[in-house]
Image 1 (cartoon, one colour):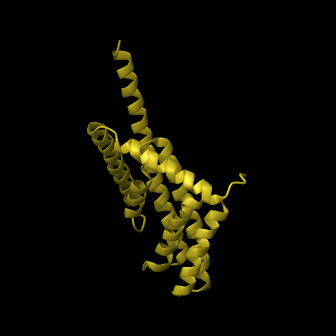
Image 2 (image 1 turned 60 degrees about the vertical axis):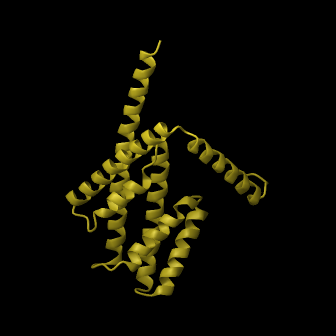
Image 3 (image 1 turned 30 degrees about the vertical axis):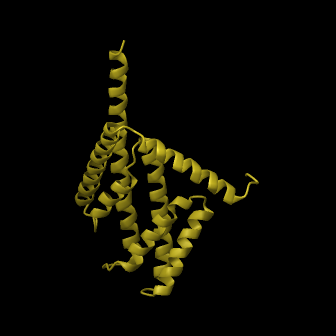
Length: 192
């Protein structure tokens, strides 16, 4: 563990992030268009798979599979995998904490707010801070969105729908990554 103050580390990360944004903004228009089209195709394919699988499995709200696939789809497979890990971790922590909060006090806003805060803090304590907001989103869905049935059923179904969306996004970005490697490999073979 570094003995540097967190403020210094955050400042360096912010500087690095700005430099990375500058690199992307300086890309030629054609490259930005190609990246945008590629990401759009991956997001549409992942969302369609997530929604389709959700309908096939008769989940309560299949659209969560589509939304999750869109949320986790990134430009590369590795980035999508990292985003997926954050998403499923956040959903699992949020669903667990929401089930406990719902069991203790149903339809109580203060319990909801406390449950949401606990889920965010737990994500940070488990060293998955990026999953904190996703965890809070799951708590909100489980505790505030009207539903029929037990809270545990809603929480587990939500986790299942997230998993469907993640699997769909990972499948699509994996295929896209392999196609990109094949395409780049054929370009290098064609050049003298």
